[in-house]
Image (cartoon, rainbow, N blue to C red; front, side, top):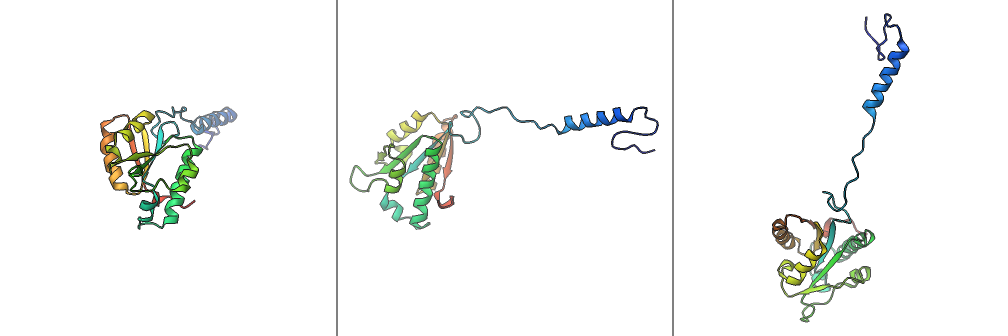
Length: 183
């Protein structure tokens, strides 16, 4: 004779006991488990405690010369990214090129408005990773994960990957500003 869900059959002396046992088994099987709270500094995911935002070359002449995205969308994207970093209190490094030499203008005003306390690191090297001051600033943060946003992403991403691969504790996450929805 087939048994029911509660293992009850006519020969069973206590169908109520079988029902209770079945309920206990279901509760054990369906009990949800949660992972232990992870350490935000060593977590494999991006957290405000283990990541830093690096913004490279967001200057008027370079922004205006970008043809792969409308200027308005580009500015909205990088401002939204900066606001997010500010909201989560992530450290931000802002880098410019050739401002002190007089060849380029400073960072776009929309970005300076969001990050008034961040002093840009001006470079003479085209590749930010070749500038000792820039590299020292990144290392001083002590963050394991870097979110990099720049106008010429492939150059920064490949250089930063080579550099961070030699630093076993760091991981670089290139961020293409055109992939972010406008603010």
